[in-house]
Amino acid sequence: MAAARKLKRSRMLGMVGTVGSAASAFASTAPWVQCYGIARAHMNDCAATTHSCAGQSIHNGGKYSFLLIPKGLCQKIVGGSLTLPGK
Image (cartoon, rainbow, N blue to C red):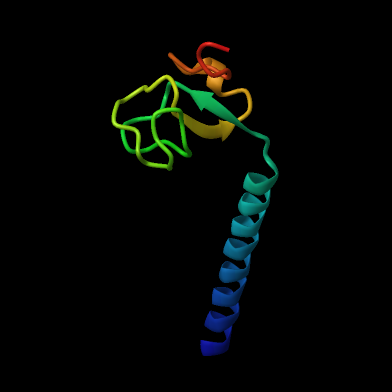
């Protein structure tokens, strides 16, 4: 009985590990783009013209702050832009 339970548990853990590794492999190969104008305050991904580091934006939807998101999603978000304003 104990051996059957151990076998079942190891099978379940193996399936969970396989799903997790497949998800992380997909995430690392997906094309990412900079989407301007959608970052919430203190949640931007990188430097902008008004600050020099991630997380330093002080306004929601700052037009110079961006988030890295999967390609094709930015155009579907209200206020999202693939280009830096003024360019």
